[in-house]
Structures are given as structure tokens and as C-alpha cells.
Amino acid sequence: MENLVIMHDSQAVTTSLKVAESFRKAHRNVLASIKNFTAENSAVKNMFVESTYINRRGQEQPMFYMNRDGFSLLVMGFTGNKALQFKLQYIEAFNRMEQLIKEEALPQTPEEKLKLTMEAATHLDQRLSTVEDEITDMKENAE
Image (cartoon, rainbow, N blue to C red; front, top):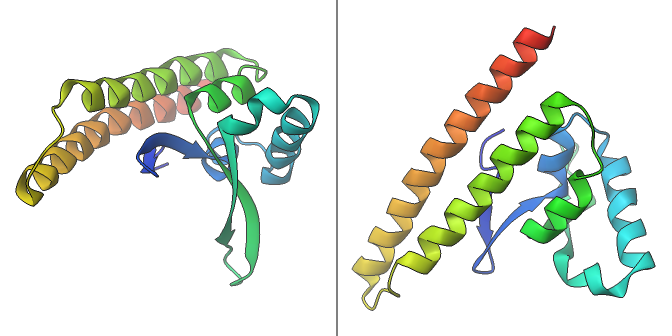
């Protein structure tokens, strides 16, 4: 579960693939839920961006990128203690990424841009590793 929160088009996002993996849901069901949300309410369309990925067989398959609001809307329907703990930690990771982006002045030189990117990536990797360890512990203790 590496790179749970990623930068895509200068925005902190996740993907339908990561949501399916993290919550042990079939990806096709996650896709169906997103499609239902966007078909029922045009206000949520800006929370989800349709894209594709290449599967293990080399075939192009559909997926979605989603921002924090889209993630929250989608997974808040998931239930159970593990889901609750994961959602809280995931939301914290999104918030921290946004805070880092807001706190840093926009870099002017390529060196400043690289430094800022590396600092943000290092911090996020550390936080996400902690979240992943906690999820692993929760899974092991639940079995």
C-alpha cells in the first residue's frame, strides 16, 4: 500500500485502485460506486477524474483519481472498526499534505522546487509508512 496519497496535476489525490486495495473491495465495485455518484449528482463530478491503468496482462483498464472530498464521499459508506481507523488516518494524511503545500512558499529556482518536493515526499512517506504499519497491526490483531 505504498503511495496512498500522491500528487497528480498539482493536487493531493488517491486512486480507485488504492481504495479497492486498502479496503479489500473489488475494484469493479469501487468503479460502480463512483459512476453512481457522478451519474446521480453533477456536483461531485469534479471530485473524480476518469483515467486508465495497464493491468498485469498489459490491458488498459478504467480507474479514477479522486481528491480528498471524493475519497471521503466514497469511503464514508464503508463500515467497521478497521474502516473507521483507516479513514481517520487517511484523512489526516491528506490534510498534512495540504498543510505542507500551503506552508511552503512557492519555490523560485529548480533547486528550491526539488528541495520542497523531496521534503514533502519524505514526510509523506514517513507518515504513510506509519499508517501502513498500523493497518497491518489492525489486520493481524483482527484475525
